[in-house]
Structures are given as structure tokens and as C-alpha cells.
Length: 500
Image 1 (cartoon, rainbow, N blue to C red):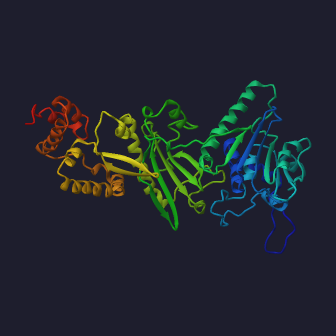
Image 2 (image 1 turned 45 degrees about the vertical axis):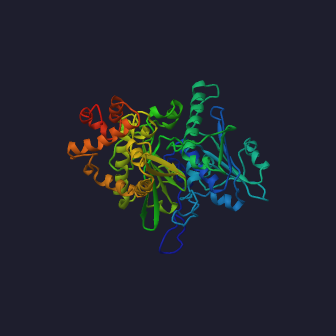
Image 3 (image 1 turned 90 degrees about the vertical axis):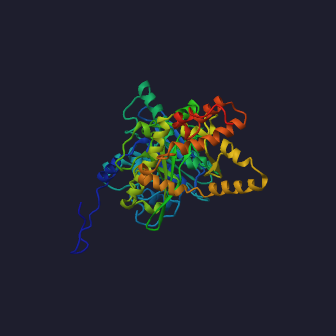
């Protein structure tokens, strides 16, 4: 409809209310992403608790989301119910999880035709507003109703007992339950399965908030949900690859790659849970976080890398500030992101190296990670973890190290100081970068070295083992399990029966 001309230069053309509101239903949300978008609002409002209530009654089923955040005044609520309530170009607070001013409306309309919000600010009375798409369709106007639907008032009463907070009520959920009947067992089972899917999604998307010391608590039908850590950070066998910081303009992107344990290194329950809501193969790749809220849960970000069974243990954490939303093409649903062109090569490099490590673990049944825990293998280097930081030390139980330290006291301190210096100056970052750029150019242990020189080193260890009380047969057997001599069995066979 064209309004009366304001002047000769332009017309005022407002969108038709029924058409616009129906169009807002088509943003592509599913029930999981829609509810997550509402919880974003609760977190931004400072909520400590969010209570989700799923009530089954066939086509009359409803869902409510109640939080104990700061709530809203009447003016704030009216603005929050306005489609496009904030300009996405406006500068946001660093911890703000919103962007487009659409989430409450688009997420809700994607699932229901009646959206009611009741809010209560501190020292204020509660206020209510309702969008009813059928009513808007009848009137053809942007009429935001000032009360709950008849018979729905009691579904908002929990807020009255609280100092402040907000409750969002979804009714007429045509996209969730349609025209199902209360006594339809199949429809009821689908409803219950939907609740499970929502829980799995929320435990993943908000796991950092659920893990905090002063943690957010999310309740589903009076039951507290538990966080899902996609990186198994508390498992000893999880491999933390070096963290990287990339910069785009003045913004910093923090990348932490992980290689998860082979299934033989964790109990079956942990491994099954670690598969995630969509399974091991689907959950590999980059995990994009914005203000600690997960946006993308396992994706290779259009970098030309395919999901591969051998790479399923590769998961890479990426942290973004909310100032990079447009640069990363983050959508309204907050379920898609793509790195800026200038960062793509770095992301691809990191992905390839992480995939290669994960493939090694998968193919060799976890030996790379498990080696420092195995009695069957002797390794020169050990990985350690202190205050969340990874570092590497020389294995003090290595036979040659023990023998080197078994010298007169006046020289022992020199050897110890030398070993410590080597440990403290391991060029981890340079090795990481060189491996990512040209991994095929790295030589293998003793590659191209004459057998005579390899045998000389091997002989020193062999003698140390025998001196330590092993028989020649036992010493040879241990050498076969000692890196890198497991690749030189033919030389081990030439070692003498006597070292005297």
C-alpha cells in the first residue's frame, strides 16, 4: 500500500504486516536453533537460570522459556517485540550475543503462530505483549496485543514470584505439532524425541557457560542439563596442538586445535558421548565460538576439505569477537560462519596439519598419544601439561639419559643444565609452522645416515641397558620398542652377545 506522498521526491512504502510476519517464518530455523536463540537473550540479560517447559497436549501443546535475568520495562519490551529492533551495524557490547534485532521474533515465528512475552524489571510490575499472526492477518495491521490469550495467563504466573526476569511463551505451534491429537502415541513420541534433540543441542552450544564457576543453569522440565565438551579437555590422552593467534584488521582470532583420543584410550561411555549429537564424522572440523557461544559445531568451512573417517578425531576451537560478525558472514540463526578471504590459507594450513595428526591416531590406534603411558615403548620425549599449557621434556627414564647422568658429580650438573636448556628451547611453534607448510620435506629419524652411525648410538643404549641389569636378549627386545630403533630391527640383530 502506497501512503500519501510526503513530498514530490519519494513515497513512504511500509511492508504489509501479514506478508512480512509470514516471511519472517522462513529464516530456516529448526526447533533447536530457535530455542538457542532465545537463550542468547537470557544470557545477555544476565540470567543465572533458564527454565524450559515442554507441555504436551496435541495441537494445544506449548513451550515456555523463563529466565531470571534483568527483565524489561514496558518500553523495552515493546521495542524488543519490534521486528528489526536494532540496527546490525550498531556497535555492540563485547559480551552481547545478538546482532540483528530479529532473533526473538524470527526464532519464535519459525515454530509458532502466537508469541507472548511477559517481562518484569526490578521494582516494576510485569508487562505483557503478544504477536498473534492470525490476528495480524485478519486486521492487516501491525497490532501488538497487550495481554496474553484467554486461558494462557496462568502459563506466565511463575514470573510473579521472581524479582525480575522474562518468560517467552510459544503457542499455536503449527511447525512443531501441527494438527496432532493428544492421544496420538506416535506424535507424542516425536515430541519427546524433539525434547532430547533440543537438550543435546543446548548442552553443546552453551557448554562453556554451563562449565563456568558461576555457571549458567538450564533446566528442561525441572531437570538440570549437563555440558558437552567437544574437545575432551579433561582426558589425558587428548592431544593439544599449539595455539595460534591470527589477526584481521585489529581483531584477534584464537585457534586451538585438538586431536581426540583413539577409542582404545577412553572408556566406552566417554567415547560414545564424545561422538556428539550428530556422530563422530559429522562433528569433525572447526568449532566457531563468538563470545563463548558456539555458532558452528564441526565444519571444514568451505575450505575444500571433505569429511573423512580417518580425520574424525580432529576438532579445532576458534574464538571470535562479536565485532567480526559481518566479516565472517554470520547469519541471523547464528549457525553458519565463513572466514574472511585473507584468513582462509591459514585456516586451511591448520586444518591440514590437525587432520594429519588425527589420521595418524586413527590409523595407528592411538599409539602416538598413548606412548607416554605405555610400558611397552620407550620414548625420548614426553608431553606434559601444566596450568593448561603443553610443554615437552626429555624422558629421564630413557636408558641413555640415565647412563649420561651416571657420571662423576662435577660433570652431572653440566649434563642436567644442558638437558634443561634443550627442553626449554624446543622450537615448537617453528616446527608446527614448518610442518604445516611443507610436511613432506621433514626428514625421518636417521634418514640418510650410514648404518654405522646408527649402530654406534644404538650400541651405547644397548650397553646401558645391560649395565642396568638386563640380559642381552631383554635389551634387544626393548630396543625394538624404542623410538626410532623400531625401524632398524636388522641392525639390532647384529648387536653382540657380549658387550665386554
